[in-house]
Image (tube, rainbow, N blue to C red):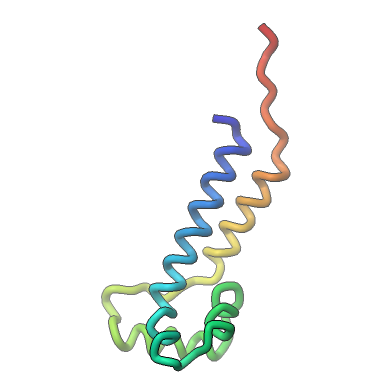
Length: 95
């Protein structure tokens, strides 16, 4: 597998895992109306006081099953995806 494709697969996997982790953390607070989709969506990419409050509410309802979402996970995935676009493809040797 070429290096850029490997980076693409790893980056996409990290982004998908971050989205699942975000939903696990913020899904209940959206469902119960504590945060709107837009407010919770901002918590996907940026940590703020409102996001901290929502995490506290989430961890209050199931503290042992969830580790609070970490916004850097999403940005790590985006960074790896970006590297996959910038990485030069490995050339195959002529036969």
